[in-house]
Length: 330
Image 1 (cartoon, rainbow, N blue to C red):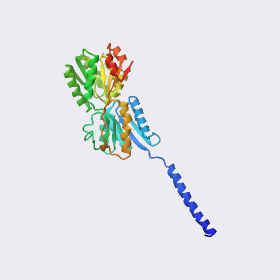
Image 2 (cartoon, rainbow, N blue to C red):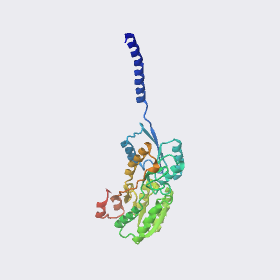
Image 3 (cartoon, rainbow, N blue to C red):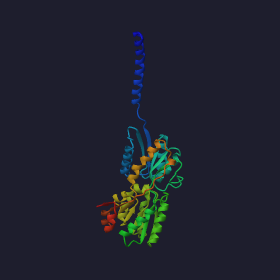
């Protein structure tokens, strides 16, 4: 080959190589896709702080980092259920890839806002009516449930251990929460088996707590069980303070209740549920359909006891119960 032909061939090769290099550099410069999540809850940011941190930790463990490849739009209803539909509609307008919810009312509001955007409930009650079944939800909802009606019977047994003279039981429930129905039946059955008188008090919003506790006093309740509800969780400190003011030993569905001043908390580890929720988010972002992902039920329950509250109520916690507790607050 003549020298001039070789030179012309090299000249043709150089632009081609430069084009390939430029394309590769451009591809590297393209930002990674940023997935957008919506997070909706009836609670406040401060009430859910440990759970939100667990949720973020779960995202990081799966390779999702806020500000890099994922963003989260948080909406806090601050205990006001009427805010949820507007917030849900707003998140739908933002075209989030996945809606993450906390509690039944937030999940219902999200479903009413969209039946196509995938919804992952990080912690909800009874999903009956929203899904076909726990094993195969169908539709656009999946996630983790705290549904375990049998746990309410165990809570009553724990109260009976601490309050041997227990004869009158008050139950605080939110009639608007579907999970309170099965839990109430379980609690009534357990109360009847122990020969206890039973007083059910429905509270739909924080303004109802005062009258509910007044009714407990009128009914001469000896102890209180707080049934599962996201609004109750957000107002757990207020409920604990009212219980102490009315000299009522109280047990609720989460460790956070005892940590906020209640006597005892017995239920699933809710922080761990939030850490696991990103597993569902990840599967959906990778193409899985929410209706094909089984809803996870709790298998492990934890007991937390507040000894400071017990002392304030003049109660002695049996050593056998303390040994069974997962956490004791001095």
